[in-house]
Picture 1 (cartoon, rainbow, N blue to C red):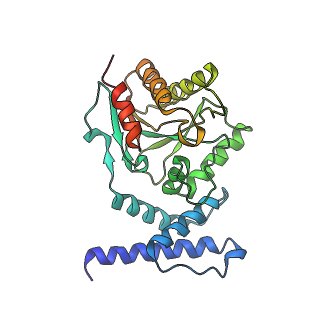
Picture 2 (cartoon, helix red, strand yellow):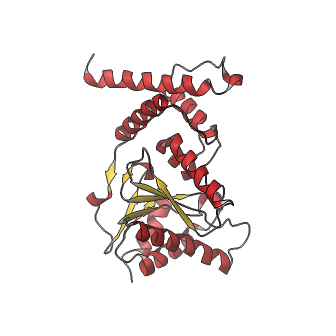
Picture 3 (cartoon, rainbow, N blue to C red):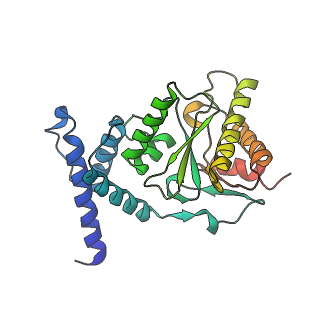
Length: 263
């Protein structure tokens, strides 16, 4: 067996160990058949992590989980933002999976509960970040919210460790949800998300921040308007913090390219 095949087998063993441990937490799933297909096993593990409430778990599980998630991220490929070329001084544009970006902090478009998305394998960024950070992130967020004593207000920001993500920290911010037409208050709240993240990063000595497209997608803020607010606010408040605008869709990439590099 060559080294690559051996490592794949080690990953499979780790994945199976994690699945078995998590299944033991749910009596109703005790007889669940674990699929043989590796991709289906990944989906099952992610689903079990997604539905798991914020609570402690044994060190043996965490040791296996951490190695597993770090190997999965390495297999996807880590991008160090310092290898990118700025599109204007101190500002970068990068299209890709934000959970594979190495920088000071990435921004999570969170919900007001702040403990992540509980829908199995949901494609929102909140779900992705919590999945690849590991179960520690949900517990850390829950402890933060317990100390706060109320849901997270829209437009503010909180910071947690990134655990198994290649960045150092995660900045969590709740953007406005658009139900009808965008109001001036919606615009102000979205700008506040960007400003609050930058202020918090500055307070913590974080020198680089990657922003996702806050409030677009599930929260229905129009993409072009959201990008305009994001760029204007970052230009005004970033100071000496390097900012990476992270996009996933081609359409958002085009929108940001039209906005950036212009003054």
